[in-house]
Image (tube, rainbow, N blue to C red; front, top):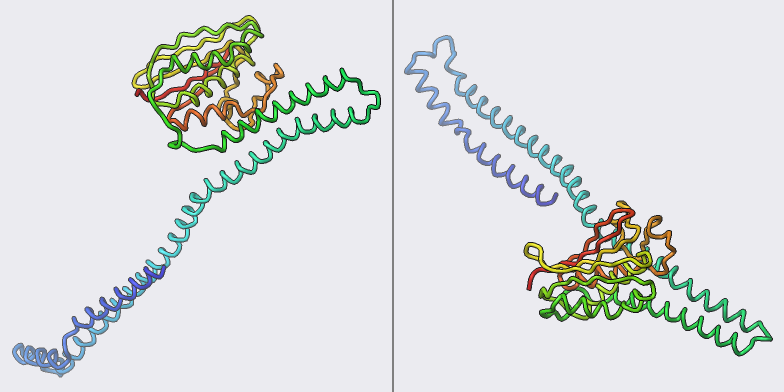
Length: 327
């Protein structure tokens, strides 16, 4: 607004000065008009005597009108600048603050969810230990059983904290990437989940081709482990998980397809959110977990320049696909 007012003042002063220069000096106007009146013989009845004065007044009146018009238009322009600038500034300020507000809300939600998830195993540990302490007849066998339960709860806590630390870990560009074969990555991931699959009599059909991408082998294998673990949890017993990989257009991919209950459409857009778990179709199986696995997989993939997405049909299973540009 200060710049607009300053520009308007300069423009008005310059324009007013130029308008003033257009008014002919009175003495020249009078002499010119007097000679013209004599040549034309228009001095009869005294008409020519006041003609120079009328011309002088005409010029001055037009100049004054032009100055007022210029002043009014500049005032209108500055008023429009004030209103338009205020509206534009408000819009841009809102656009600037929106990502900050979303980040603040996400941080607040994350802290709340993490606190809730941590409270459950801690409460279990505290309760079981207090009950055991108040039991004067606690046997050695009961003590060993209590210790086993405590170790299981501590393992859950460790898994949760490891996931949270990874989610809060380095961003993209801070992970060392190199040429990696998707077939090797799939082999590493299968070795880590094969015992879980065998416990549920689930077969993993591996058809990953030796496609090479630029990634970190360890973290990419960890992301695939998350997808396989997720598929094993939600697949029915004696079913098959299909692990495939290869090339599509200019990208390499690796996919995990299960035969589970599927994911409802409105849940698919949020399935990678931290601590989010689908309400109905996938939660009816009462699968244990903290809801950070898929968000962890997404971060691990995106840190390396890859993408992850899901396609699913309720009742027919889900397919999670990781893709990378060709190396």
